[in-house]
Image (cartoon, rainbow, N blue to C red; front, side):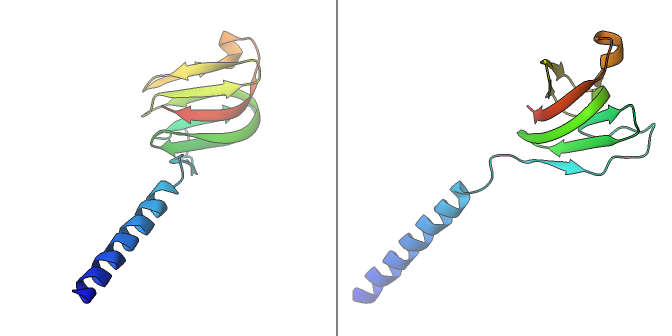
Length: 116
């Protein structure tokens, strides 16, 4: 009987530890990915600058912090997303984009991308 209790206690402790590890997993599942060569767009969210730098993010629901200035275009091929920039934000649906030079008359500094 004692062996059975010890095995049960060990199994319970293992389950508690496994649950603790699962709870400690990161809340954000979005990550920076390599951008494809233009004119192909990323399967995720892509921000493009007027000096040739592109930043691409993909994954499931989550947020990515960035600091990219002179962004003229934000696009999403796959995800719904919110692109936060100094002074506001833009919501993107799948297969959509926004050209800040056209909409606002200037480029923006993007500081966060949320995939929703």
